[in-house]
Length: 510
Image (cartoon, rainbow, N blue to C red):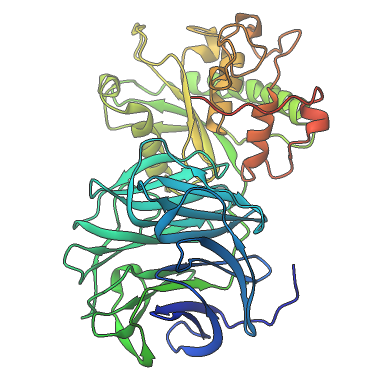
C-alpha cells in the first residue's frame, strides 16, 4: 500500500454535475471541503481499509465502473472493474485485505466482485434477486452484507461468508422504501438507512434482524437522494442531500436522530460517507460451543437426568474437540458447561412453523444473548416427554450470523445413542453451525462420502468414541472453515495440506 496523508475521522463525497468532491470532518458534524475530486457521474461509494487508506467506487460518463484510492492530495490511479455494464449506485467495502465492489446490471441483477483493486471482475451475487437504483455493502468480521430495494419494492439484506454467494433475507420497514439503501458496520453490528416513499423519513438501524428497530427519523429534512450512514460506538452519523440543495447531518442514537443543515456546504447531488477504522474492534470474541438441555414446559426437569446428561455431553464434546483438532491441526472449538433452558411452550408447539430458529431465539432471549450478534454455537438437546418417540427432531444445524449458530439434537441420543449415534451426529451438526453444507452441495454422494458432512453409516459409533478409520473434511470444507475467522481464528486453508492432489475447488451447487 502506498504511503498516504492521514485524513480526519469522517470522509464524505458529495456529487454534482461536474463530479464528486471529498469533504472531511473531525467530529461528524462540521465539514470541510478538500481539493480532492473524482470524475463521478452520479452516486459514489466509499470504503476505508484497516490502515486508514480511503477507496472510492464510481461510474464515469461512459458508464464504466472504477475504483481508486483517495488521499488528502488527490485521487490515485483508477482501476476499471471488469464485467457486465452497470448503473445506479455502486457499493464498496474492505474485507480481509480485499475490496468488495457491488453494482446493478442494466438488467437489474445483483453483481459483486472481490479481490485486489486492479483485479476486480463482477459476477452474479444471486440468481433471481433484482434491485432498483443500486445497492449497498458493509463488511463485518465474518461476513459481507448486501442491502437493496427490490424491483418488487421489498427491502432486502443478504450475507455471505465468501463474498461470492449471498443468502437472501427480507426486512420489514415501517414504510415503503424508495431507491438504494445505505449500509454500515461496526464490529458485528449493522446499520441500514433508506428513503421512505414520502422522501421525508429516514428508516434506520437494523442489527441483522428481520425488522428495522428505529422507525421514523427526520427533524425536517426531506431527502433528495439516498441517505449516507455510518455506525460507530456512539451511534449513527447520517448525511443526506436535501431537496433544498443543502447538506443535512444527524448524529446520535438511532432512534433519536434529528437532522440539521450543515452551514456553508451545498449538496445538490448524492452523498457517500465513511468513518476511519482506527479503533474499530477486530471482531467479536471467538465462537464458543455451549450445550443446552432444552425443556418444553410440559417436560419436568429431572435433576438426576441433567447431571448424567451433562457428564455425557462433556465427554462427547471432548472427543469431538480432539477430532476437530486433528482435522484442522492449528485450531479447534472451545466449549463450556451444559445449562438448562426452560421453555414456556409445550413440546407439540415445536412441530409447527420454523421451530429450529424459534428455539434458537428463545435460548438467546433466555440467556440475554442477541441472535444477530451472538458468538455462541448452541449445541441444543430437545428433551421429550416420557414415551414420546415420534420423529420430532432427527437432528439439524445451521449458522446464524457472525460465528454463531445452533445444532439441534434429540435428547435421547445423549444416553441411548438413539434415534441416532450421538458422536457422529454431534460433529456433523456442529459442522452446519460453523457454516458447512452437506456434501451434495459439492456434488458428492450424501450416503457414501468420507466427509463428516455426509450421512455415511461407517462414521457411526457407540458412546463417545471415534470411528476407525475416522471421517475427514473435503478441501472445499477446509476452505470454508478457514473463512470463518470467528469460529476458527487460528486456522487457515493451505492447499498443500488440505488439498494435496491440487484439484480445483468445486463451486457450491446447492
